[in-house]
Length: 163
Ligand SMILES: Cc1cc2nc3c(=O)[nH]c(=O)nc-3n(C[C@H](O)[C@H](O)[C@H](O)COP(=O)(O)O)c2cc1C
Image (cartoon, rainbow, N blue to C red; front, top):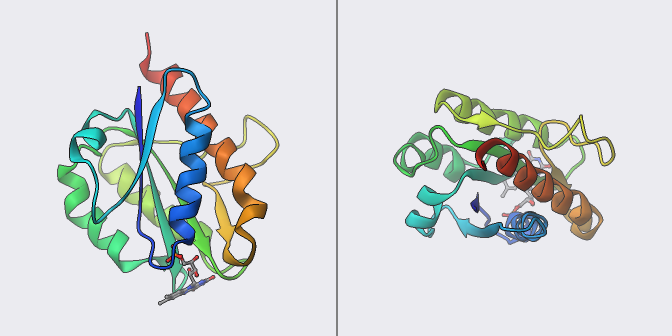
């Protein structure tokens, strides 16, 4: 089963956390996961993916404008509509807007008819609410949560889509 992580990242934080999610996804047997920038991705891989996770830096307590633009244009032709989706964010400040940015992305996913999954709640610790958020001054502290999120997303995709 293929799973894709699509991110926008100017200074590399969001890309780094996308790679952590991929490493958590690939811990699940039978999963092939890859991370791509929204400006340069393998369209066939995304089309063939059972789930797509979208990541953004927080800009002004919102998703970054390139992710916003991607969701209003390319995403709709990229095979994302109807898939299992999730979202994550990186920010400089605790309460800098990560949860708001995730909520905005998930809202677009709902409009595109996607199933959305937070990675949290039912599985207990680490508790993930809407999706994982990392604060940029210590990304390594958040890496295990992002890997767990990736594993949970992959397990959920397999449960939903594999016979
Ligand atoms: C234009 C701009 C606006 C930003 N606004 C916020 C903000 O509202 N809250 C916050 O915590 N961080 C804010 N940041 C910091 C970024 O969200 C943070 O550094 C992020 O990890 C960058 O991700 P990247 O390295 O993947 O580009 C802002 C950065 C930029 C460039």
